[in-house]
Image 1 (cartoon, rainbow, N blue to C red):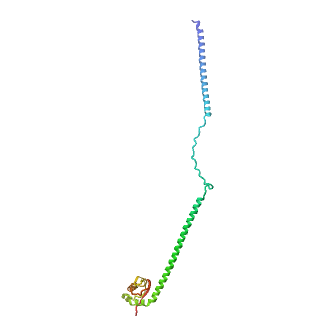
Image 2: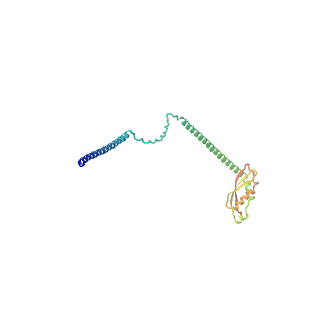
Image 3: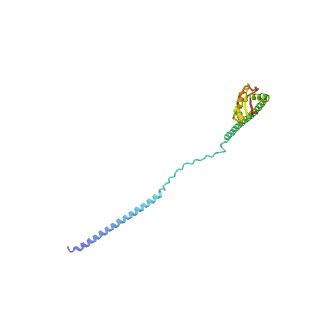
Length: 225
């Protein structure tokens, strides 16, 4: 037993060393395989990513569709005829001219009527004045006598010594009646009332005129000494 002990130990150590070397070599191989696989995986990933990047197209940007611009239609003066508009303008101008001519004619007619009216009124006034003058010239003595005989002179005015001239206007009708008696000028209210009453009292006593007349007669109030 003692003889075989060292050889046994040596063989055991040899086996152990062989096992250890096998174990360590296995580990080394496994670790190297892992590294290679890792390298391979990394390389393959890098290749894949590069190829994917190359193959994949860049993402398209979303292009906002712009609303189509409204195109202003240019008036084609050459193609579109302008005759209707010109005709409308001509018609409008003619209508305006006709209206202006009508207004001018109306204005002329009004002016002529106004002239005729003024002429006729002036002629009537002249005629009435001539008729009045003729009537007064023919009947002045009768009118003066009537005023003298029928003059109303208040006692209060005589006592106070009130004198003056009063111009009376009135309308003398065809039957010698008197209308629209008014005072044109006077210096005393008492004498104005007295002159008006005098003319009203003479209604129907004046000489009858040939036509309706508008007369202005002065009445003098004086005190005889």
